[in-house]
View 1 (cartoon, helix red, strand yellow):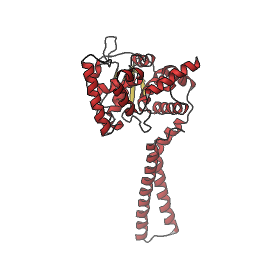
View 2: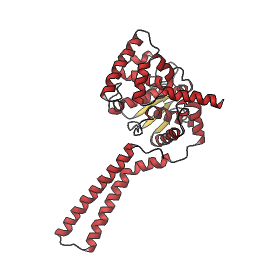
View 3: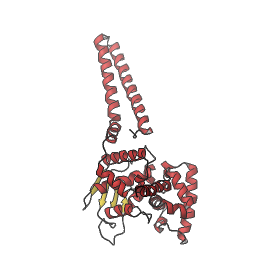
View 4: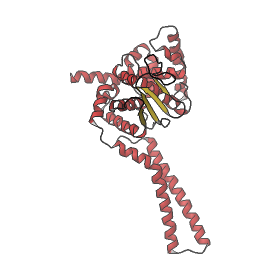
Length: 314
């Protein structure tokens, strides 16, 4: 099974040690009580051992049960219809090797089992669910321990919406994340368009999940702290300011919305990186290279494999 993250292994060990220590302490305390009461016997020793074992078993099993559940989910068969959707719409998936494709599907299964996806005046069909999950998995694919603990629910609206969450073509919002409550809102139309047209370098769903990645450290500030050390952070800030000046001077193809604030800059260039890496690497080589280091993914290489696969099939 591919799903076997370092976090999972460390948590199992910690849970075992913690449960064992609590059970041992309880056994010692019971032994002291029995000894002081002068009730030492085969029956009392059996009682103490039994209570300690039950305590250990309860603590250990209850703490690791969620991870065992994820491991069981990862072993489930991935529906053929879902894989067809990935092959048709998700270029990132198509460019992976067989082992990574298995890992991607396992993470899709786990994500869908843990996150609620709700349609607001629209249906949540298989395509919607798979594309939402793919949008979440793509930017954190190389981070096996990432679980989006801050997300509880994804709301899917039929189209764009305004600040009062009313629908309409003249509305401004294509997606939104809440700073509290763990909710991500995505326009269904924009979700699908983001995977159909990579040339524009736009993918609203990846944009919104980039905000959640940014805020995993408690602050949505344009610094994905859990993905970079201090040295990389310093480089990122310099490149960010360089690219901002190019946008201001009209010498950049990056969406000017990136100038809104630092968090929007990170989200905008992240969707560009994953949607059209060839264009980004050509027009913004420094930006592409640092995003490659942040996400630990060479998107150009993946997209070349996609093109190669298309020619081989032809």
